[in-house]
Image 1 (cartoon, rainbow over the protein chains, first blue to last red):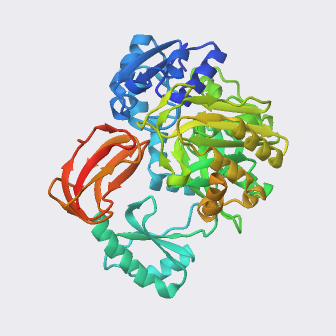
Image 2: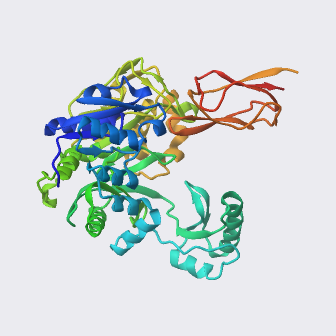
Length: 458
Length: 73
């Protein structure tokens, strides 16, 4: 492995600042980049050097591979940290970084490519012995022979899904065999019109689902460890809102099985670096199935860092540098309970519409066992060009109840003025009786929306 | 005949203009689509009418409360 002492951060905001902090701890120089809209942000000032890479829109700056590589060459960087989002899971970028003689801080391009293809990822997981959501083959229009048998194998309730659909579009639920054929034909006809491809497939439907993911770290030689789970069930439109570890009410033996499966997947792929194996868990039966693997550092990684007292970003950099000392599984010890809440620039009482603008007041709370990762400072403008997250607030406490109460307290002490945000909505979630009891599922926010919003405006 | 000014509720970029001057639109019909913070937000007609003027172009940045379309109702 080639050594390096300058890292280029191909990202912005809070995750760029996060990588700068770990570089500093390791005595490595950091180089950041910025778009026109971001020129005055903290990640520009805090890096040892910073370079402009273009216009405000991501495709004109943070996604410009050519300019990023030019900055790498000009600054003498020996490695590139991609953060999350943008180019972090772009295999072509990882390849271009390698071809330029630089180290890509992440898995190898083939792993990124394999895991980026959801079908292929499922197949790799299945071969590694990891349970995947039962599904059927494709059924083309007017070719529904074998549909009933396929449905029995998948199991009811199931979803009829358009092969060309996505994000919840083009799927319908079937609870009983006698509804199957009619729904299949209707979905095919709808899909043919909407997507120009009428093919469908069947997939098991989990009525009350939880999203539980395993933080993993592979050493690139076929060995890997896990750093326990994160429950990310509290989501709204597939956007995570609150994440925590340990997952409430998840039996330890189930957690251990999921962890072993996640590690097996990393071993099978000779995974290198930090990654996350996502599972959907049936909230009633605790059956769990592989969903996908994210081949990057996650937004919610601080939950794991606080729970296990590790610096995941430093581990990524040291592994890429060849200076990471091996970590054995038994050395990873989770302590207490950690919860993270994401503050978004959005207006909960107006259908969560984005709310960019100037942060007239932005005073972070400060207390023991509290961590705030923010990309902005008071006086900064949150522009409409990037995602709406303005800060992550994470607490670590001895028990879930204490962590939950402390997070609510920290959020109340967080002074934000100038833009609308979901701070009060987050507090309402934390104080909700169902959430407090640990009875979480991905339907929580939708089901409790009225009551959650009532306490926001009250 | 009266005119109605259609305003945006958010700050964002004009991503796509759907209607053009002279088009008849229904109530709630989409006039244009804004993009803000990785979300697409349609701007729709508050009532049925005819588009008399589109005041923005694709790629423009518009701020909350600005008039983007004038509608004849």
